[in-house]
Image (cartoon, rainbow, N blue to C red):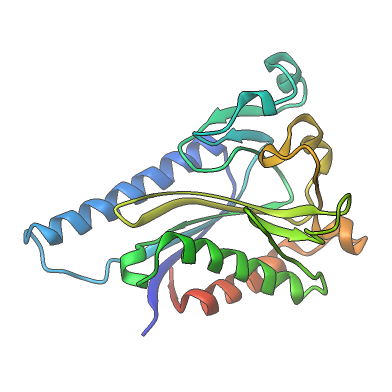
Amino acid sequence: MGYNVIYKDIGFRDYKETWDLQEEIFTGLIEAKLSAQRGERPPENTPGTMIFVEHPHVYTLGKNGSENNLLINSLQMRAKGASFYRIDRGGDITYHGPGQIVGYPIFDLEQLKIGLKEYIFRLEQAIINTLDEFSIKASRLDKGTGVWLEPEIPGRARKICAIGVRASRFVTMHGFALNVNTDLSYFNFINPCGFVDKGVTSMEKEKGIKADMDFVKEVLKKNLQRVFDIAWSN
């Protein structure tokens, strides 16, 4: 029997609104766990949640990241129609925007019986498997999270999917951002994930044509189901 996960595709949604939604689900899952541990309710298989979303242009900086990796000021950001948030995930600075599939898994790792390192490894694997179905060969970068193309080739390494997570009491939030038909020019205004010597790319850039977002979501959902042994529910 797989891990029960509620799937929510919430479409195009403001970053802060989605962050608040994550926090509500995250807090509820932790409270359910603590209540069961105190014996106030019977232990149960409380479902996780997977949110798929696209955001308006926004830059987010992880709790240990450096604002020096944001290369424009607030006036320039407003001119680009972008906003900025310092948030409570790991990792440095990244960009979210239209044409990007952002996934927020709110999972109980104790129910999955895995640790945080294995969790990130499986997220990366689901992305790698998805890209392989579109004939894009991707892999991992040594000492760096996320999914990359030609990671070990100087001058060629480019990130196609960023990953940054938070975990408390083995419950996760935040997640991954897969560049599908993303406007990559917005990455010119940051040092993505703190790197100054590596690039970014998208499925559209690699294949030369726009991808069908809904189809990519279905392939990605299938691969997440396989690597985490998920039983989806609505």
